[in-house]
Length: 293
Image (cartoon, rainbow, N blue to C red; front, top):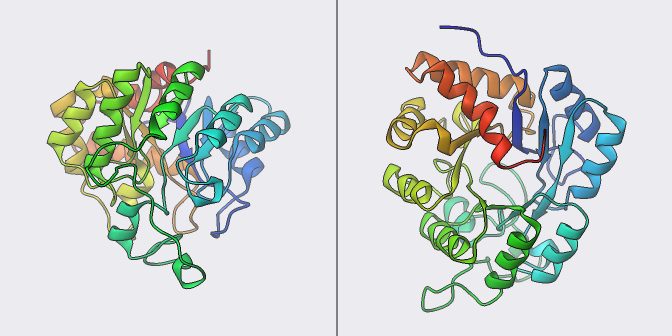
């Protein structure tokens, strides 16, 4: 069993400051740490802000690594808002995430809107808002989803399910395939939300989606660590060519992104995942999602 390194690795999911939550490092310091670890590319995600312009400026301050950003469709951008997506993609966003801490599934899982069970404020205490779902009263996708999918396809961007519920996410993935979106990612499937089963992950993969394992979710005790055996079961069921490893780091309880993902990846090998499969999820599969050559 060899030592896993982050040389040539990528990360689709890093939280940095400035943010409304406390973060372990800002954009520049995070990019420097990832570059110095030998990583090739990273993507900033923020629940409360778009990150494509932040990434543009960071890449110019930190040579030697590609830095990307995107947009999360929370209430601060109008929720499921095609106009916001249009502008974000024209400004260089590489990923469009569905709602995170403003989603209905997030609210059901944590009891909070705009926060988590252990941090953040419940925005409904300040003014009345409704959690976001992409489904109408009949369980069908709302009309605003379709122009967003067309925009994602037009820009060859990544579509992330983010904090949608598992069934919501699968409906979105089916629709994205119908439209012809090439890059679709089921975000942290074992986190709550979406709390996916292995069978749901298999369905997503069969529909052409990538599944994003987030190292910080597996190793963090809050809200609860996720058993590494689940990740191995998913890889055994679907094959490593359908997965990527991201970190979902940024909170001070976690280490910096490169070390979090390195520890997770190394731990997977101790659970019996082949090193070649781990390397593929950390590095090779990203070439199908990001323009990094």
